[in-house]
Image (cartoon, rainbow, N blue to C red; front, side, top):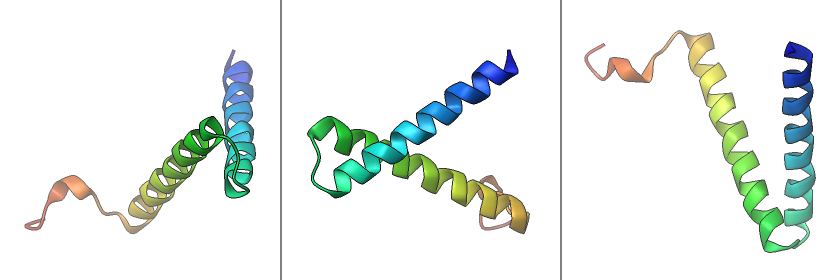
Length: 64
């Protein structure tokens, strides 16, 4: 079962990358929308990983 979930995630990631490439070359509107979602997801994952490595938590606030 977990294999099917991982394969599904892999297919979604690959499709998002294809849409990002098509959008960069002036593709259709749906490809640009999918590319925007893919890039935003990647940015959120990157920031989440950076926060985890630093040991910070955004919910702590300024007072810590």
